[in-house]
Length: 331
Image 1 (cartoon, one colour):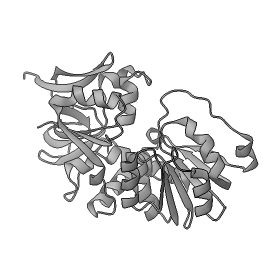
Image 2 (image 1 turned 135 degrees about the vertical axis):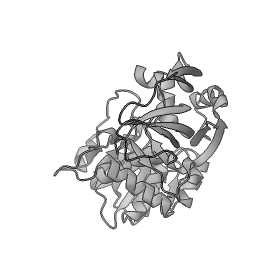
Image 3 (image 1 turned 60 degrees about the vertical axis):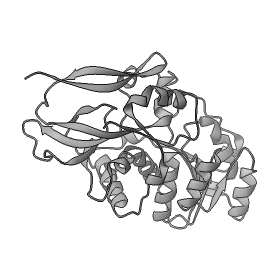
């Protein structure tokens, strides 16, 4: 049987290109997906495009949020059927062969659109960070960064019992969106005295939990200043490269804890030390979307036909802060 031809995105030098390649038939345990849309992850993909994060494999196949319809199944596949809508953590392409591993490929509930489903991988990053934080009822949570992860954290932290949610970002439109999602206080640290405002909002106690969702290690010294005694600081953003962490005397004097949260290391098999698997988290998030408890559609700020992808990535490379949720439509 002849191989199918499909289109995918690659990063070549410092630009994005559309290329045609041949696709084999589904192997046993695989499904073939016809793509409806895929979501660009601006932070990760910009880092790869500019070689700040120089991962050859990701540059050859960027992206990890693809939604579409099953059009063929491989031998032995019983969990998925032709015609079903699914979301998979695969790269930008018009056709995609995906595994049927439950942490990699999931059915989209009837009440969740293809577009909303593409936010699932980044929402998983937020949920894993919150689980690592071990938020307890009544805490004040400060979120650094109002990107997709930060805006998802606003909603999840409210569900999880946060008494007060404060978010920091440099972009006015993102801060306004965060307030629409339930943030109690939105601060632009370039124009406002963030430390003074947070200490005032907490009655001088500071934040017991801070979650860094910027991917920029330079924001940590600010977090050390407004953290409460014995406060926890969770690093959820993907740092673009190895960077020294500026630990200050303030960090030691306040007995702060610095916690890493790297979602790909969330287990895929339940164990006695960590019961929440990647697939557990993703199924929960899809259920929350289906019940409208988790809203992501407002984060979709731009949508383009895939033919415009090279120009879209030029805007992302230039650091266009108006671009939050950027969707590619595959037709």
